[in-house]
Image 1 (tube, one colour):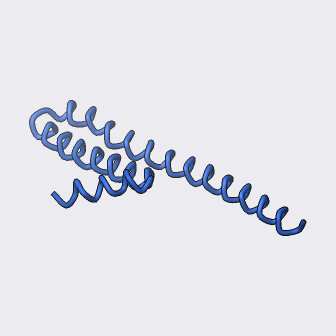
Image 2: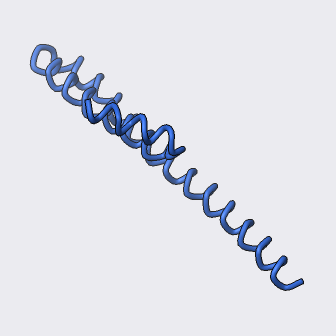
Length: 88
């Protein structure tokens, strides 16, 4: 129950990147476990299902990189606007 409140607070505080990290991590772990269980029954199907956690991790890394680039650009623009105001 506390986990649901934690995610709700993340959403309310506009901390989307934390929420996104948790979702992608959860999907990757759950799909890795499912792929492992399927691999016990059918090895080729388990190997095919291993692409899902790999794709989740890849998308998570790309989202983190893009998010940090956007955030640093916005902060740099805001910083330059503050410097212009202070110099006048």
